[in-house]
Length: 397
Image (cartoon, rainbow, N blue to C red; front, side, top):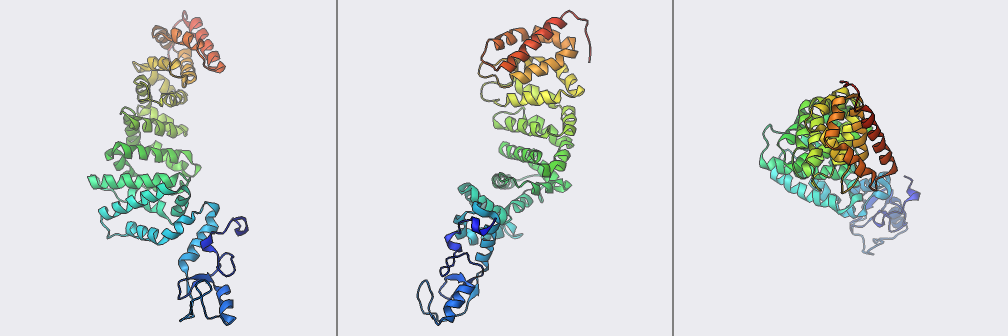
């Protein structure tokens, strides 16, 4: 961004020229000026500091490299640069030094991460500065660079803190650095953390999977995750858990489905059964992502293997019917109806089971509700399908 388009922070202005400092130098009084401005001041015969008016015992000028670096950062980042962090530059440098140190203990690094967590929560724009200072790749290296096969309680605590910071920094869309996980050793570390971490850690790792799946810069990595049988099984197992962990699993599975190649692998590892169980067991707000799970099932039903898995699941059709009409809301209704149409069009067994499970009643209730006109149209189409196909000879997939 051009300098003229931005308001220069006060600390970046030369006290003499009131312009952006180009070449910062500091006098013995501790005041910093632009070199050309202070040289003109001294050349004019002035022997004092322009700001303090103290007599200069030593007229030498020391380059202020720290301020030069911050000004360069500001010119690159633009208005998002948070001047609040100017006063914390040395502090941030000290935190980074501890995290980079091979001699610092895990406890010391954990305490440092606590301080860094507090900083990431203070200012959204300040996180841009942390990104420019290289904290994100450093944190990712600490997380996945080398993880013991058996995690200690201390390691788990450290990983949780680091992931909290990473997710805040990733919110700025800096996903390219996640490609480090293409290295087998780092992906293995990711898996160990997923297997042995707390529910919160699993949830954070699911958010990283979502970030990977959302960016074109990490498309190759997304495909690599989709081929990882152990990881897919872990995600599917996660949706059976309670509270927020299951929701995180649903979001990660849905995100991975952005690639067609990942869908077949998810079905093979039991993805349809996991999603159906989540929907079938959904009650109140505990399973508030049932509509997303339903939409994911609909997407997977483009595969013959997914259709077969749904029909063979004892609660498969019942789970879809459960989503047709929900008293609380109609989210997921249209996906459920479209999914039933996909299944019932080619399967007499599915039509018979759907009617026996009460789908006609659910569709009629839906037609009397305040759902959208498009959803009602889909409901009528399904009713016609079930009515016209009821007496036909059975067909099999």
